[in-house]
Length: 343
Image (cartoon, rainbow, N blue to C red; front, top):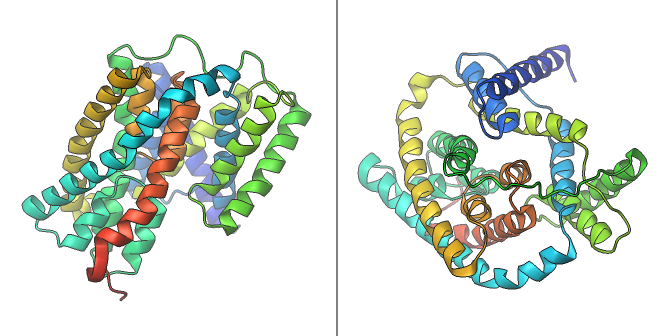
């Protein structure tokens, strides 16, 4: 890492930490995610060069995955019997959100069909941007609209849960934490499995590696306990900072139209997703906080971390977001069709 990159990373850590402390001071829900995300976004739009090293980001994904899997108990497996009905609604929700958003972008903002579809994809940011780079579309609009969605949902989802008093009374994590040697071994094995998943091109591979290892060791009783807060809290701060860095290097002026379009569409999909989550919660008996986070079209890693922080069921949330990403991987090339020609 060059000196300039090291300086940018250190400045990012400093601003992200300050954002978290401010969010704590004003009693924001999920302050370790929201505070850094907002602070880094503002600093990036102001012209500062900020970045989070890819290696650090990847380690955070593994840690979040391990923390999710640590919540899986025999009681959770019993509760999962009601999830198939909820799973059925995931592709339905994805199709509704995709086509409503796309119609709005074409009708009111005059974007072409391919740009509107890619900008409207409810998730799978890296995959969508890869598709956008290979098609005839407005790549800047797709990038901005998708980044606005991730940032807005990071901020609004915990606020909705907090305002309506849906935060779980008890943490979903085990009451005690793993010892340091066990934690290190779990993270190491999770990272190895995650790299294998990367070779297989699975979505959110590093996070899934942590989930798989953590679930298998906890459900068998081989390992017990959760990830300690001294590791989780910095992980949340870094993850929030990663979200904010997506707006670095661009100005508000050149992003105005795309920013407005992304913001309006995000409001619409948030309302639709909340309505679907409410129906799923009513029909299946799944707690509303978990359903809201599970159907919010935000980033998998961010929503998984949020589930842990807000004491929702992270296993339920993670399973639904993984299904959403897998469905989008198949759906997007199909809906783009022949119009998505390579450049």
